[in-house]
Length: 336
Image 1 (tube, helix red, strand yellow):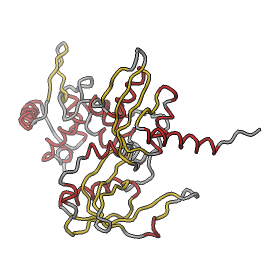
Image 2 (cartoon, one colour; image 1 turned 180 degrees about the vertical axis):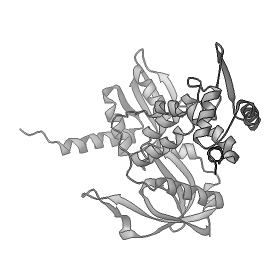
Image 3 (cartoon, one colour; image 1 turned 135 degrees about the vertical axis):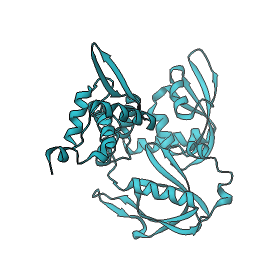
Image 4 (tube, helix red, strand yellow; image 1 turned 180 degrees about the horizontal axis):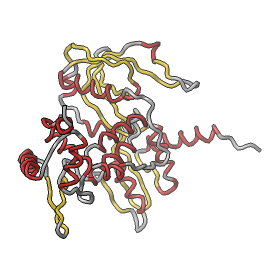
C-alpha cells in the first residue's frame, strides 16, 4: 500500500470526519482555514483538496450543519455556527445538574462530560463550572436515574412496580424497612418537591394514595400487572397535592391565617404562590390566608421566620403552635 493510499484509507468517512472537526474544533471564536481543515483530515487518513471540500461543505449545509464563512483580509475562515444548544443554554443545564441534590457527584460529572460534546472543545472549558450551593449534600444513591426511568416506563405502560424501601440507622447505614419487605404499588405521578423526587402511587392493600421518596427505593422492577387506582386519580390535582402536603409531611389540611410584617410578603408568596389572599392590617403589617397541611414542619417553619410572622387563626392551629412551643421549651429547661 502506497503512502497516498494509506493517507486516503478513510475516504468513505470523509463527511463524518469533517462533521467531527467542525463540531469539536470550531466555534465563532475559533475558526479554521481551508489548509488547516485539509491538514486535520489528513490526520484522520482522509485525502482532500479545496475543490472537493467546497462540495462537501455544501452537502453538510444541505444536511443541516451551519457551516459559516468569515473573511479577514485575504483569508477565508470556516466554523460551525448555530448548534442544537446555545452555550448559555448548556451553562444553565450544567448549573442545574451540579445544583441538583438527587444527582450524585459521579453522575453529575458524567452528565456534564456528555453536555460538553455539544459544543467545541474550547467552549467546553466554559462548562467546567462549579456551582456552590450552601449546605447542599449530594445523594449517594447512584441508581436513582434508572429507578426514575423504570417508574416512567411503568406509568406509560400502565403497569405496577415492586421495590424495597430503605432508611438510615444510627450507624449511618442503609437498612431496609419492614425487614426487607417488598412493596408492590401502582405508580401514577412523579413529583419534584424540596429537592427530591417523590412517587405518588395507589396502594391496593390499604386502598390509599401514598407517596414514596424515589432515592430510598431499591431493587425496583416493573411488574406486568395492570395498574390500579384509576378512580382515585381521576380527579387527582398534582399541584394541590404537593402544595398541601408542604414538603411531603402529613397533617390536617387547614386554611391558616398568618399575620406578618410587610417585608415578609415575598417569603409567603414564594412558599404558597401568588394566589394567596392578602389584606393590609395596618401600615406595617398584613394578613394572608394559606391552605396548608398543618404539621410540625409547618410550625417549625413559622418559628424560623422569627417574630415577624405569627399564626392568628384558626384557634386550633394557634393552640397547636402553643403546644409545640411548650414541648420545645420542655426539652431545654432553664437550670437555676
